[in-house]
Every structure is written in C-alpha cells, then in structure tokens.
Length: 129
Image (tube, rainbow, N blue to C red):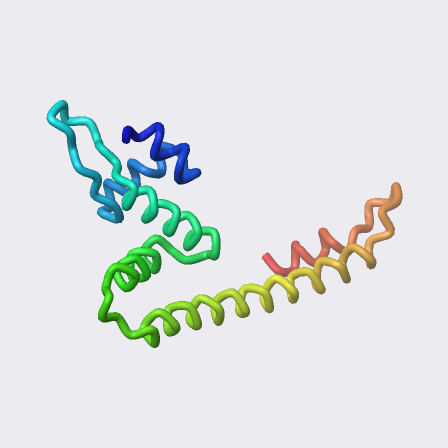
C-alpha cells in the first residue's frame, strides 16, 4: 500500500510516517518504481508507535519498546523497566505542575484585579527574575 493508505490505516500523518522511516523506526519495502510499499506489518508498527507516543514515550523509548516487541525472546522485565521509568517521570512532572498551580493560584487570589496598578503577580515575577 502507498503512504496515503498507510496514513489512513495507522491514523498518522504522512509526514510523521516519513520521519519514522528517516530515523529507522520502520523500513517499508520499495517497489520497482522506487515508491514506498507499506505492508500490514508496517501499519501495525505505526499504530504501535502512535500508541506509545500517546502514552508519552520518547522516540528513543519507542525504539526500545519496538525492538522488545519484535524480540520474541525478550524479558518482560525489560519492558516493565522502561514503563516504570516513564511512570516515575510522569509522577515527577505532575508534582512540578501541582506546585506551579498552587503558586499561580496563590498569586491570582492575591491580585485584586482592579483598576489600581498594584499587582502581586507582577511583583512576584520581578523578584523571581
């Protein structure tokens, strides 16, 4: 199938598919005319990559997960290590965002939001710079 059909079946834009090919995540066959010829296995890998990226895995982590997926002698512990690492990263980001939210919420409540020029938000930003 051509890239348009692979795009439609995988749900990924053609540009993303070409990028994944450029960085070696997929390797579609080439027809006699030089055009890419995507197989069902390529589309399956593209869906795998789309789901992995949707869960927040980096391109390099996706590369590792795809290699483990294709390795029938893999140890599930290797997959779990990658997923646990990502989970820890997500938890860290959530903590950071929660702290940012608390700080900004405090500043918003401290600001009267009236016609006066006094603004605790701007005061805090100028002290933090």
